[in-house]
Length: 272
Image (cartoon, rainbow, N blue to C red):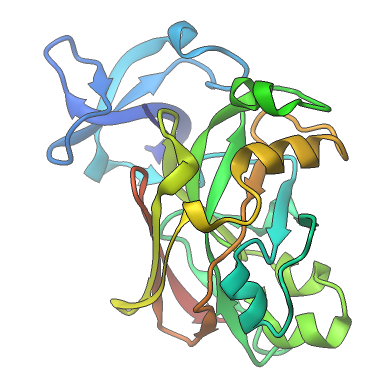
């Protein structure tokens, strides 16, 4: 099931994206003639069998897709692909490297990525698989991790690379507004073990990898992070980026595509 957050006629809601069915409900099948079947309330903290539809549905082309979730926090993992760790000049870490991105860094599909050109000379893309947490949890054992995952979406862990090197820590470099695009929706029915991940800039492939190459997989990451901090419904966990990261320029179009989810695209602009 594809769960989207969307705006239409000044109203914001959640819905299921899919092809129109005779009963008027949007089912998550097909790519043509997509509609959004509006949900009543929000989908977090309830099972899929408890999701209720309002009866309203809209052509996908008529709505504006928003960031599919507004998390209390974005927990990110650094150097979780061996090839990326080495391209950054280091060896793969023995344990996951955790850092935080503020909730104000979240942007949606089609929103601009704003380069802070007055403060930084290099803004990089980092395509990633994102995990969306579905229920409050702490100290989750590996065998129970599937119970706390709501679904998966595409992410771009945008980074001011020169500030990252200068500061010696990552809060400023990864915390600017618009530096965490998410979308286009949350896919709830997905096995994350071996998905193709591709990042393109202006239609040219810059990253191409598979989630099977993660040093620490989704199960290990959720269990590890939840031993450190309580995770709330809607929180997002970024699982790391593969090699091929690079700089973005004003006017670039960057797209992150993950098998089984879809494509997250954003245009880059300079801060005025």
